[in-house]
Each structure stands twice: as structure tokens, then as C-alpha cells.
Image 1: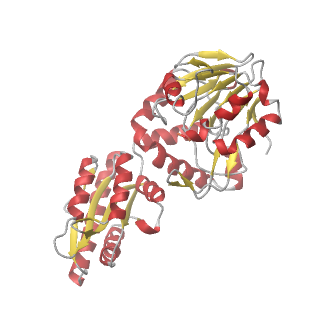
Image 2: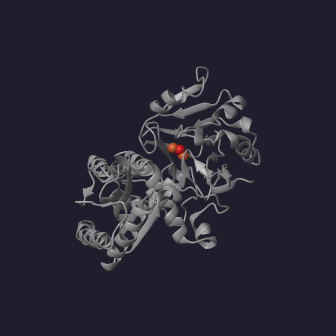
Image 3: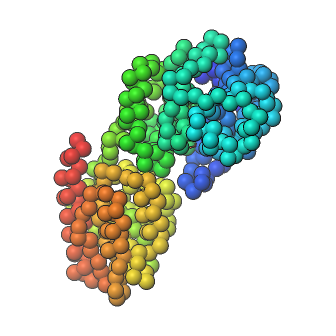
Length: 405
Ligand code: FEO
């Protein structure tokens, strides 16, 4: 690997993780990258590190340009392990380097490293440092992605180093958006942005909008956005800013998703008829069986569709565990602006549909009721009712979707 110059004397020195498929439970079929950046100036400055297992790759990248021992400053934009766990190896080489970090960052990082002998400066929004010919402006972005998070803006280059925000889990030899679009496609890039947002940043949509507005008020002239994962936005940074604003405003497609699981296929048979009912109303209907699909993919589909129906058999008077697992993950992501309903099968007492509605109502989502239940196997009449249920849901969804146009 060799470093890549992204702006005059500013280099990407990160690592490409081609093989990771499970990123703390988030399934990453296309791998990821751990981006970090080196500013060659009077004060050589490293911005973020990488995941510890890639520290050697990063240090070798730096060595292509300069001895790692000449690093004077280290900016830690975010302390999560995929970006800060290689800090120990860097500090072993440059124990006198100055570290710039938020107060929450220092507090959190001290749980991973003994920082007592490190030269740490706490920074907050508006603080600046000079590396010689370049000025770094810090902007705190708490909860994007952790309480410690901040971004670093290089004033002379219009470069926003945005840590997790605007990233994507893509391992690719392309470093920039235009390169990726040429070698793959714009759609693939859009999907990667959506997938990442849905699984990482969905809970923080209410913070994203004011934060982007704050960036605009600061009058930053952003010509490039360099996140800590995936490709760097050099051709069209405005596009990803707009995508984030749209998602924070609840943008979704006028489509229906059915997520379900099944024990003896009764709930699955209901799914067939419900999906046909949705189609009858002219809407696309995606269907996901949970045990056949990574949870993170199901969440991305949930986020991309305006409405979702959740199907489950009843097991011991409760929801089938794979469906509950989905709901638990979804609840933590605090989705908004989505229409939801439930259906399922049972043998005697029932319980799954009731429990699913309780969970969905607790999330504050738009509810479509009543749900539909079938005892043991759906009969022809039950299938007809499921068809009507799907059709009714689609009709309601078309009305609900108008609120977002
Ligand atoms: Fe890529 Fe929040 O770490």
C-alpha cells in the first residue's frame, strides 16, 4: 500500500480491510476501510489512527512519506476502537507527541490507555491549531457517533475530516467518489451510504440536521469530505450532505417491506398473500425472512421503505425469538416516520401479534391496526383476509407517504 495525496501535503495513510464480514454484529459483505490522514507540514500531524490490527499497515504508509517518529501532533476525532486502538503503537514511537481531543474523548480514551504521561490538549468547537501552513478547526459532533466525536476542518484546503459521518463500509481500491462511480456505480455508492446510515446513525437523525446547519453557519467552504470509512467525497461532497439531510428528514421510498420468520410455514404462507395484496395496490413489496438474512440488511431495507409489516408465529405465548431480535435491534435505532403493522400464526393462545404491537407502539411509529392472526394453517378464507390486509396496508401507506412529499 502507498499513501494517497488527497490535498496538497495531506495524505490518506489508512488501511483497507477486504475481509471483515462482521463489524461488531453489523454484517459487512463488502468489507470496510479505516481511513486516517497525515499532514506534512512544519508540525507533522496525524489525524486519527486505525484499528489496532492494521497499525503496521498504517505505519508503513506513513514511512513512505516520512519517519513515523517525526509525528508531532495527533488529532483524535473519535475514540472507537476502529479508529483509536492503534494509538498505543503510535505513542510508543512518539511518546512526546501532542494529542488533541475533546473532553469526552479524553475521558473515554483513558479507559483504553494509560494516558497519564501523554501530552493531551482538550479542544472544543471553534478551537484552532496551526501545523505551519495549515489551520485546523475543530468542531464537536457529540453522538455522531459517540459522545467524544468531533470533526477537523482544514481551512486552507476546504477539507472536512468527518470521522464516522458520511462514511460507508466499502473495501475498495478507489479512494474517491468519482473513482468508485467509474469502476463500480453511483447506485452502489448510494446504497452503501444508506446501509451505513441505517445501521450506525439512524438514532441520531435529530442531531444531524442541526449539525449540518451549524457547519453551514460557520461558513465553511467544504470542497472535500474525508470520512474514516470508505471513499472520500471530492467530486460531489454536497451530494452526501444532502443525502444525510434527506435521511434525517425521514426520506423513504413508497414501498412496503415484509419481515417475518416462520416455524411450520403458516406465517410464511400468510406472507405470500399479504405481499400479493400490497402489489394489487401497485406498490413494490420486498420480503425478508429473518433467519435467512443478516439483521443489518433487514434494518437497511426497513429504513429504505416507508412501511413495514412484521410477521411472527407465536411460541410459548410470545413472539418467535428471531423476530424479537429484529425488534430489539430496531428499537435501539429509534426509527421515525415509518408505518408499521403486524401479523402472525398461532396454535392455541396466541400472543405474538399483540406483543409486536406493544413493542412498535413503544417506539412511537405510525401504527396500522388491527393486525391479522391465523390459527394453525391459513385456510383459503384466511388467505383472502391476508390479501385484504396487505391491500389495506398499502392503501394507508400511500396516504401516509404524502406527508413526506
Ligand atoms: Fe467507525 Fe464509531 O467508529
